[in-house]
Structure formats: structure tokens, C-alpha cells
Image 1 (cartoon, one colour):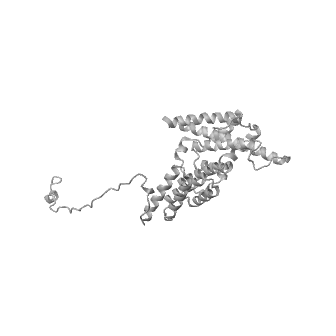
Image 2 (spheres, one colour):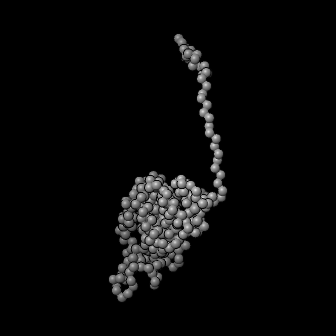
Length: 318
């Protein structure tokens, strides 16, 4: 019987006499740039280099709050970006929209967000776009349009506590606006009893939606507290306090809170929260109907508005 390995040829263990070919490496000299080098005159025809220069100029001008200068640089930078480079193109256009907001150019800002909407292709794109659009509407005081964007964010990320908190606070601001003598309601006050009835119905609905969103935010915050620590946990505890204060301000009855909590907690399950993943969703698939069907309509079916009339908030939200 042969010993294992005794039949190997000795040549297998001999060092190769052929020396490996040595490839001479070209010398490398690192490029050193002076601070704010991108402000110097442009003496290159390289498109990519021009793109970088104007991007850096725009970002620096925005940081310095020179928004018109930043917008000009972003616009020039956009002209050098190939149509296929969607990532950089999206980044530049978002910067342009923010500049337009600061410059009071609402129409231009919304035109940019509409273009980005048509190019959005995944959840990450949609999330950034909805945040941006909500900020544009907030900047110009359009509470209803801001609420619409935040509803879509909550539909896209149903377990994101900060989206629910922001939506709840927006509803609270809207309720205060509808309840003030100079409120921004599209319904005109007057002798028309039907108009007054519509206004009351709208206030009632906004009141209940504010309660609903604060309850939802509170439920999600409590569900996530066990996984948090340090400053993240502190932020959650502060948010819980704000939610509790807001609900005390809105003054729903105990029966109302119980009904709202039952509806809003049905899907707040740790396993489902961990598995939730909606990558690949399209903006076309997100609408007010998703939000209404998933939460609002089911809450209305409980008859909660008939059981508990709304209370107008006595303090302003933080």
C-alpha cells in the first residue's frame, strides 16, 4: 500500500526557475489643491472638471446663503451633466429647488420637483423627493399640499415615527388656521349655512386626523424604544412628551383614544415592522387613497366623530 503523497513528482515542490516579469510602475504625484481652488478662473476644456468646479461653487455659495449665486452655479453645472448621470443630476436639481425656495420662486421650485417626480424610480428617490416637496410647500405656507406630501411619506414608510410626528403637527397647524377668524380655508365664511356646515365638517376631520397621527406616532415611538439608547432614546422620549401634550391640547375623550389606538395599532407588530420593505414602489402607486383606505376610512367607520366632537387647540404646537 502506498503512503498518501508518496507518488507526487518531486518537480511539484521545486521552485520555479522562471522569474516573474517585473512591471515598472509609473510614478504618481498626488494633486494638491489650494483652499477654495474652484473659485479660480477656468482654464480647462474637460467637461467633468467643469462640472466639479461649478458644483463646488454652488455648494459653497449656498452654505454662505448667497442663494442667487448658488442657483446660477447649479444651473451652469446642470448643463455639463450627461442625461444618463441621474444621480448627480438629481442632486443638482434638488439644490436648485432649495435655492428657489429661499429666493421666493415658488413656481420654479415646484417645476423642478415635478421633473424629479417623473424621473424617480425607487423608494430612496421618492423619499427624498417627497421631503423636498413638503419643504417647498411649508416654505410658502401651503399647509394642505404639505399634508398631502407627508401622507404619501407615511404611506411609503408606515413605521417612520418622525413622518407621523411631522404630519400630526401639520394637521394641528391646519386646524388652528381653520379655527382662526382669518383662517386660510377655501370655504368663505358668511350667511350661507351650508358653507358653515362644510367648514365645521372640515375642522372635525382635521381634528380627528391630528389625533390619529399623534396616536400613531406615539405607538411607533413606544414600539421602537426598546431598541434605542443614548441620544436616540432621548429624542424619542422628548417626542413622546410632545405627542402627549398635543393630545391633551386636542382633548379627545377616553373612548376616542381607545378607538383610535385600536385602529392605528393593528399593524404595529415588531415582526412586521422589521420586515417592512417597499423598495421598487413608484410614485404613481402612492396617492391619498392609500392613506385614506389604510387608516382614515377604517377609523371613520367606527363612528368616532359622532361620539366625540372636536376640541379646538388652546396652545400652539412646538
